[in-house]
Length: 52
Image (cartoon, rainbow, N blue to C red; front, side):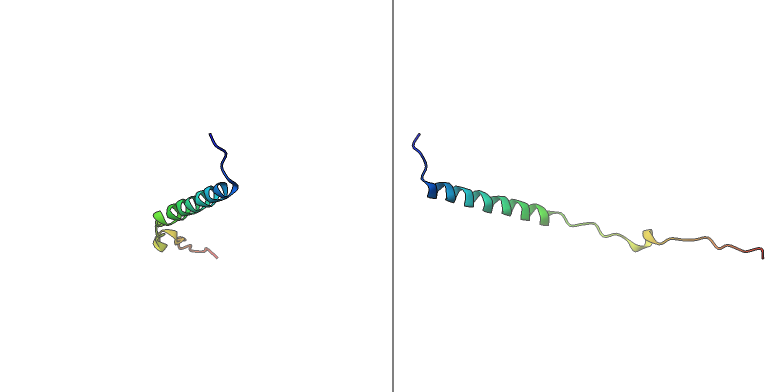
């Protein structure tokens, strides 16, 4: 197998980095986060009647 020139290795590395970055970006934007309903997060405290 013939030895690859340094420029070919550089092109290969750049192509790998671009494809890796595209893969990460696509995975980041693929799923939308679920909205948290504010009704579930409200803390309901019971009414306390004080004896004094």
